Length: 307
Image (cartoon, rainbow, N blue to C red):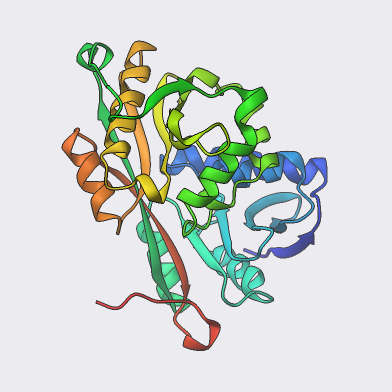
């Protein structure tokens, strides 16, 4: 198969974006796993000028699409089912890494073909994200789900809580490359999505701390297409180890159950043993693995875990 690769820095044209979204949909259906995360899809749909887009064409047909984030730290890519095993994936990765050799490449679903391509390019796993799921019942809807002593629950108030939430989120996820970087603009974009519900963003408040710093934790739940999600649970470092995270999980599951949700999913770092233990205790089981690959060259500054 003959194809050519285009590197686009800046917003894709409407036709390019439409073709890439169509390719993503065909890959979703073929692989039973989403080709791209929500942030990458948003950048594609909105024409984000700060990300890098790489497109592989066979004539007028798009056979591959890749995207590096604005910081050139991570990337995602997909190849159309008819275009596979033709070198398209390799060409996309080589183009994406040509000016960012330390780039980390996501392989959603951890599929064998992605592992084989990574091996062929000398890339090694540097991060693994687990997608877990569980079923919930009426028992969750009627559970007490009480906060720890000195804490009260309340719903997020968009006109009041945005700046405080962004500050807490950045503190709670200081070591998380995606969640910890959510800005006011990023929060606003999420609030504009049709799945956003202020009642589903449950805040943990310590009234005695005073109005300026009394937000100490949150559980952001999400419901999309009838499936619930533990979208994010954040706890201020000063309040960790006090069972607040577990209580927030219970409160969020109660909210989802009361909304009629039967299945709940979440994403968690595979090396986060305490979080995994908590989720497994309440019935979450592994559904899919999402693996991030990077060069094993120590000169690129990419930390590679060793067994």
